[in-house]
Amino acid sequence: MNVLVREARVDDAAAIVSILNPIIEAGVYTAFDTPLTVDAEREYISNFPQRGVFHVALRLPDRAVVGFQSLEPFATFTHAFDHVGIIGTYVDILYQRQGIGKSLFEATFETARTKGYEKILTYVRADNAGALASYLQRGFHIIGTAQRQAKIKGTYVDEIIIERFL
Image 1 (cartoon, rainbow, N blue to C red):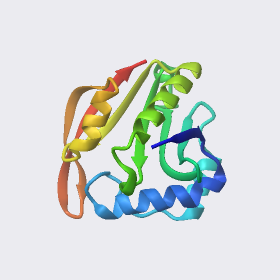
Image 2 (image 1 turned 90 degrees about the vertical axis):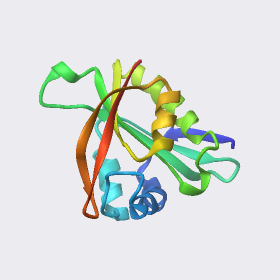
Image 3 (image 1 turned 180 degrees about the vertical axis):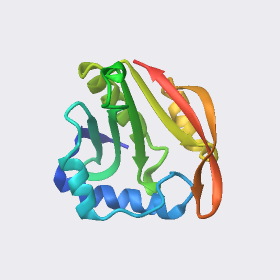
Image 4 (image 1 turned 90 degrees about the horizontal axis):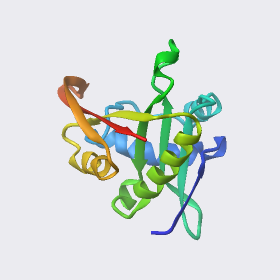
């Protein structure tokens, strides 16, 4: 699929929520357990950290948002972690495995380097083999497992901790 990756804007909030909420409602891909509102997403985008990277993938030629990826500072209470970002990647359920994630990762890695990031960290549900495989294909490595890290609909879920150096 041909996509254009650009920085997320406040007016992307409805499209982002329309991608994320079905993923949340499926209850098998993310640790998020409560659907988001468009207003909450607008506020999130408006207050996104200056050093953060927030991209959307637009399907060409109609420019519909089909995925997004955000990278935020790992912590802000100390400068010791300024080189580390935490990433999240979401692709519309209807368009997964069509190269959208690849395009998002390439753009995010490039922008992250320009903003001083040296390392990216994230958590992937242990039962989300597709997401884990995608991250591993992009150079991430497993560094551990957080057991019973999430409790989704009464069921504990382990999360795999992964990292990638830029």
